[in-house]
Image 1 (cartoon, rainbow over the protein chains, first blue to last red):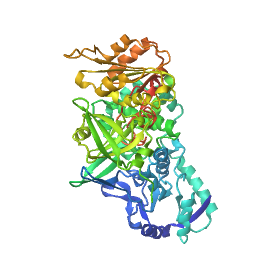
Image 2: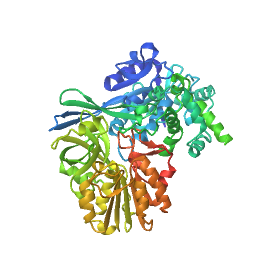
Image 3: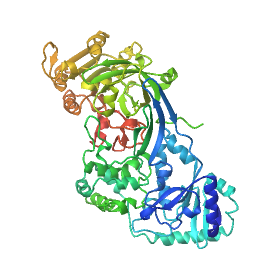
Length: 346
Length: 280
């Protein structure tokens, strides 16, 4: 693996150049202290010292709302226009948990039916990861084969070390970007920095307050669809759907038409939530998940079992957003713990 | 150029509309580009997404067999927002179609066997594609006796009357049993619920496959009868209905456990269904 060094002082200039030549998407602090990923025009808008974004960056590849077609329809005539090819994009400053979530989303949108909307954005996007320097009380990425400095899935992985960024060049895409902006990526003393990074990773890994052990949890879910435990968990759920909105691995979407004129309209797909009752409600009135009990169970089953069954990948990456945003403190790590206990007592 | 997008429908035209019942119509749809039909390759039991522009899309089973001709038929009950608009369609109107989606009836495995179809109400539509496939000139020799047992609440609620009373009974080695839930003036056929009629007809499970589709309550009681008649779980095949948006295993709402009905179904045999959590 190749590696480089970027001087901290030169990062703003690099970001400005990236924004000039590409669509640059980076963490931005908005009103009310909300941090999210947005298109920026330069370094001055980028919030480099963020810890975790309130909304995950998945929307850069799988937008919250996205037009699939525009149509002109008179009844007798029909014309449709598809999406344009997405622009060349650099997604800067992604935390390891969120990079891991993109790896979890990939197989959903690949497969027999290639989801071109996702895959073309994915293809046109260079992911620049950014190692964590602070571990929040809600963080538990280490439970899912990741860690605060894990560059897996990133094209380039930046780790802040003193007045430098240590940069791991993980892919062809990353390597091309380094070449194109070679004046910012020096060869420097990368061996020393690699060691420093390892030490930093070790130090940070010791700072996780949540100990999450998944051993045996899937087995409990494999063997038990009906558990009295679910009767308890769902009771405080309000069905607000914030967990699915902030979750970096949730991929459910709705498709709907928006009429723009007498004969014209757009078709969109937008994020949907399995927490909403009409998610599975059929026109005829039947609903296979009629109450919050079934819906809450489905969400945790999806994260801890179904995604693994289908793609052999964890459906959770331990970002902790659903824990910190849930208005009634439903905590997936507590659920993991409880399910383990249920398994041990069975 | 980028790849074709999986959620873009093909333009098509409604070429025929048949009123089946008070709230069911069958729409014949032909693609505007004949090449699309050539490559469509729908197999009996698959579904498609119909676009009613301005309303969105709905998953509807393809009720015609590919052996019938270069068109698709969709039987649609008027039950919600989109189907209400669809029911106001006129011949010649444009519609969008994408698909075919899902698995299909295991017609290869059924070769050499007798087929016993059981349907109730609108649910004859999804199995009609297989009935017509097995009764086609091309494939009739591959299957033994074909029996179709079908019931509805009233005479007016019977779908596909032309098939039931004229086309199918005249096919070789084919028998049609029709029943109404309640007696009705002018009806001298069988009266009674589908499960009871199945028990009366008493099909032997020997070298037979039963294909069942109907409202949940009909399925529930019919399965009890089938068990009594000693049909094995692998001999009982059904097709499920779920709310779907994408049809391609991505939008996440038609799952039963880890399976997506739109790609892993909609066709399951009873043995497979028993492996799934009871959430459908």
